[in-house]
Image 1 (cartoon, rainbow, N blue to C red):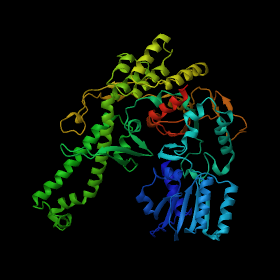
Image 2: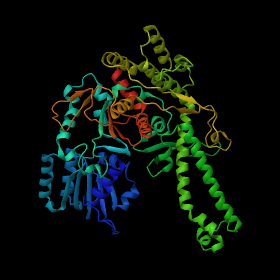
Image 3: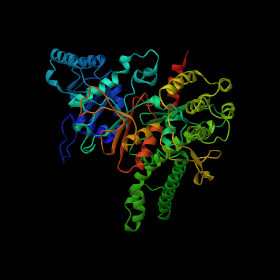
Image 4: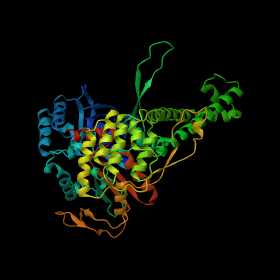
Length: 588
């Protein structure tokens, strides 16, 4: 979990891997942090620059950047044990860049590379300066308290495309199986034991570990969504909990338009609005942003009113705080200004982000796509033909149309006839669509029809509600006219349905790794060996995951009192990124 990861960094690695002293107010030891791209991706969603500074990090630099010597300061390294990185560390030792070196490797370093460092330290007369060397086993990125992804750098090596391409070797596909077995044998790095999990992280009962293949559900990663976090990931540039928007600076009338600038916003656990609404339907988010804005304006107006009554228009806060007791109300209001300004910053942040999302919803009719796809996946009655949407020039981009058709094709009990398929393909080509993803999905559908039963998406669907309330008035920041007010019905997606069957011990054939027994062979059984329902689970999707699936598991957990579920995936992709991989697989 995020708290455990932050604890590992704050109280261990960034404290020179020594336990912190209790009840101490001593100043932190000033040091520099050196990381590679992998380390940067792991740290950036967890710790802000301010938090690093509070822990004594005066500088944080990339390993392969040009770095000046700081001979009187210790350096903490957090890098992968690659040949290139080891060479650079050895170079730093030769150049005597720092006072001492604390080497933390993201994954285990081999003995031969460790010997290379020892040789370099010996040659540079810096053996005593290499103070500590640690294998941290932190080769994953924690994005939420209950969500992680394996890596961001070099993710093409474990992408859906990489493990589904026709020339994939059996030896490559068996790597994960081998790693799991090795992990169960290795007492230093067990999945469910050791103090790395943190006290109280898991109960005495082993958690359930569900290893899922992306191929069991290809519709969900293509689905147009309706919740805030998943929408941001789908339509905006959202990466490692940071969203980047293009914003126009504006220009004088008649003048040449100014260039657009990019602005980034961090969506963190400290943002209470984000924590409360990231899984909410977008219309609810828009209304909540407007409500927060109205509250802020009321508080701001109250401060201005009090200042006006006291005849203090334009006076600085220092003068106001000197007033006598009868101005306590005003003093209280002014003292809350820092909190008020932070609230305004977050309101502005979500106003800008939600407005950018709304622009996409309105220009691409994403509400129409979402509602129609929900009906396809739940086998509900359709109120218009698929061809009507594909041929509508105002409804979405070519990619939107292709995503919709692929969901239709994937979820159909029977594929369309050759005649109907040709009609659809002509309409898609006329709309500017690339048919390469369809070529792959046709092959996938033919294979899965022989191998397994189709995925069950449950009784999904949406319920149209009445007109918007707060966001339809003339003073609103959001012009929602023309956008449907859709409310989600709770349902379990395929991965969640599998998890539910396993956690509650429902009859379902499963495969087990059983650490307490011989692990040479996987145990196949229709009767789980554990007699009690599981309370905790880790779900990991090989081939890529998405925020729609994650949010579905979060909603499932909320409805199951006492249960805890963690979601992980080999990579986290948007629908556009997944479409690109399908296109590569479908190219002839």
